[in-house]
Image (cartoon, rainbow, N blue to C red):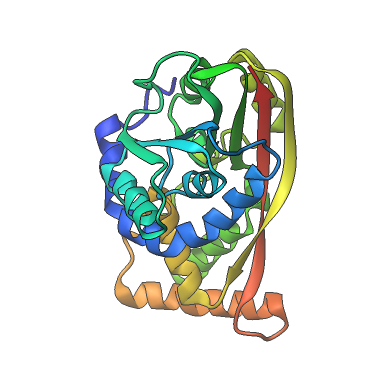
Amino acid sequence: MNIHAPSQDLIRDAWDAIAPRFDEFVTPESMQYGAHALRQLHIGRGTRFLDVACGSGALSLPAARLGADVVAVDISQAMTERVAARARAQGLSNIWCRVMNGQDLDLADDTFDIAASQHGVSLFPDVDAGLAEMVRVTKRGGTVLVIAFGALPKAEFLAFFVAAIKAAVPGFAVLPLDPPPLPFQLADRELFRSKLITAGLNDVTVERTAWEMPFRSGAHMCTMVTSSNPLGAQLVAGLTAAQRADVEHVLDGILRERSGGQPGAVLYADVNVGVGTK
């Protein structure tokens, strides 16, 4: 465990604060990635599915549409409220939302056919506890799926964003990226695999894939990055409105260079997909 990790109250408050923007700007994209990841699993009517650190439903909603009985848990009540709202809007009655610390799940052993997390448990200060809890509540023979960012240098959205801040505001203190922040703590696939095995899984695989991330403009990219994670919001927290506009202008140039003069561009990020059987 990281002894310098923020308290659970601070983590909850940070996610509560960005939940409206996360739901509006990030979830529509991340839900597409989640639906794609679930295709490799056997999900149907009656499958008991747990989504740990569910955000606003990137895995929960696609699983429910496949017929699973979904329990969606997150430390942020604001996030679970948005999952529930999306479920109601889509006419889904097979999602149950609960506020819960994923490092200490208030759920019985051997309950779920599938426990999954997309950029959720990989953000935990104690990722080992989070993985162990996912395994604990999964039935014998059940599946655990964990999706986490790969190598930090391959996360183009973050590299370009930090470069734009440094170019637009020389001397501005950007959050340190060495050591990598928590979202990248499972970037090493062998380390990721060993942690899944240590947590109690068999037949473990960790595959690398690349997510395509389309950005329409510098302003759109700035909105997406700062809405996706409290760390993204912290990157620009000290900027004035004028400085943020300068960052967006630099990003416009970066995106145009990438796309051969078009106003937007597709960036890529390596993502690791870990799967194992209890």
